[in-house]
Length: 195
Image (cartoon, rainbow, N blue to C red; front, side, top):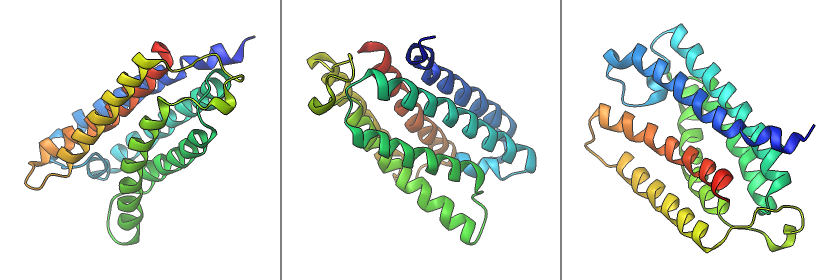
């Protein structure tokens, strides 16, 4: 069996899973007027588990894609895969350490901040090939795909800036936070399927 080809579509499965669980959580908590996804998750125990399980499943599928497909079939810089490992760890922290009060809130808060900047870095590196590892993969980024990469980096920068804009309503803040992660996921899908 060609395991590399098998793992190629796990990024798509990850996006569908996170979208389904995110929508489920949103539908359950839209009456709470939470300004952040993680605040919605701590409204009750069921929502906490929906959030944690959704992030865990989505992260596991994305990790299978990154390490089972991207690492084998592309010529991306090796540093990208280390950064993805850190990002996956942070996602699991965000999923299972609630944004409640005290030290847990601080851990969750700083993990979210680090993750937001890490996602921007990862998107930039997604559309760069390492000439050292060119022989390893068959997927080289051409000029057109560099433009796509620049688009995604700019989109993340704009959404990230908007998300942190003072005076946003809780609903606007929640939606822009969801959009930020969704743009990151679209960038991964674009890199996989357009290369």
